[in-house]
Image (cartoon, rainbow, N blue to C red; front, side, top):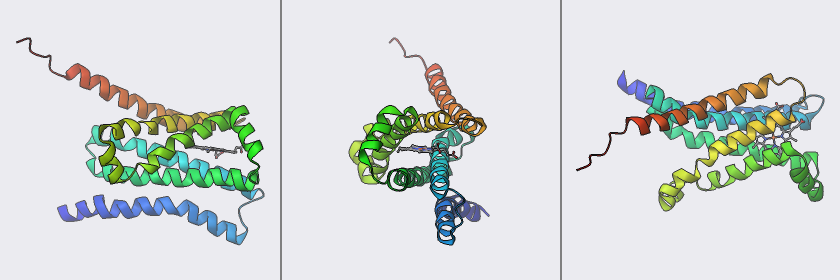
Length: 208
Ligand code: HEM
């Protein structure tokens, strides 16, 4: 029984995370090949990849709070995979925008980054995720030591930038971007609470 439980929490969860990670891209590819990406295929690609990138950023950020609140330590090994899927989808998202939407028109792309606030926010999110993906290996973790933990706090900045990007680009129905923002705020709040609790419960230093 205990062995089965540990299999589900290890290998089983690894397979589940992988399947959930590749399924949206696989379905997009399938729909693309069948020509059923809707009336505006570029928009479908942009929206689906953006949504999944943000979902994976939030899922990766949820690992530590869930581990500390409920003792779900078995989630910790999957944080890296979740983060890498977030990066994979943001690359597809950026690729759709650069290649399919703007046809590699670098001057328009540069103008968008500097002049359209929601693109500036999205690009900031991408720039935060880039070093996280590069340094996600054990080798980089060892080399950077404590600085690795500090660097990986950028994941929060990426989450904030992604949520702001989504809020900014949405003109009508704000429900969906607001749901993501509330989840992110809860995760950030939990983190700050842990920090506060750790400080206040730390035993006072003896004067002797
Ligand atoms: C690399 C820089 C980025 C660029 C150039 C970019 C560009 C875009 C564009 C053009 C859209 C569609 C806007 C519209 O239809 O009016 C969009 C939507 C979106 N993007 Fe980005 N984005 C970037 C980064 C990000 C990041 C880092 C995230 C999240 C982590 C993200 C999440 C989203 C979401 C959730 C949507 C809306 C999807 C929906 O409506 O269902 N984007 N982005």
